Image (spheres, rainbow, N blue to C red):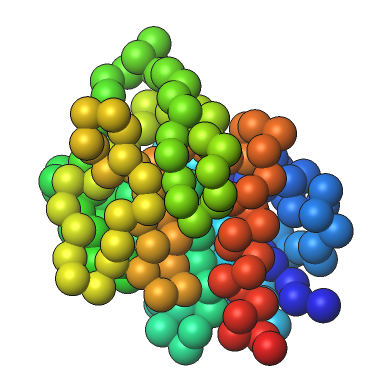
Amino acid sequence: MTKVGVLALQGDFAEHLQALGKLKVETREVRLPRDLEGLGGLIIPGGESTSMARLMDIYELRGPLKERVREGMAVWGTCAGMILLARRLVEDRPEPLGLMDIEVRRNAFGRQVDSFEADLVIPALGDKPFHAVFIRAPVITQVGPQAQIMAALKDGRAVAARQGRMLGTAFHPELTEDLRFHRHFLKMVRSRAE
């Protein structure tokens, strides 16, 4: 069985653990470098990206996490997690992990009161639109040649991307009952294990 970790330093990691539990996946909360051992994949949840980056540095997770991803561990960042995966940010903080060939703008839609929901067409998930929840969400402002856009809003702004075994979503699939994104990530995780 493939084990999936969820970065549990800050943010909505519990919701991802619940979603994975519904899919009968063995999970682990990741707080320290040793927690990365034996994982096929890792989810970096939504939350506050600056706090998460600071805690990753305090617990010395940044280097080991980057190394595991470069070795082939699948990783998925949602909202703040996508900010942390990016190669570049429009803003000068926090320092991202620099793993995905995307540039991201934090809080691209405004404050908490400007949070919204939208139905997205995501061919990788099938014909049925995915109802996405955006909370103080980022947006992908540039996509490098190694990454590809998976979903965009009607105005064309990119909100999901994939690069090999890395996935980034500006929204929160874990806050819905629709488990298609979690299933998609599990396929990415298992593709390496098989």
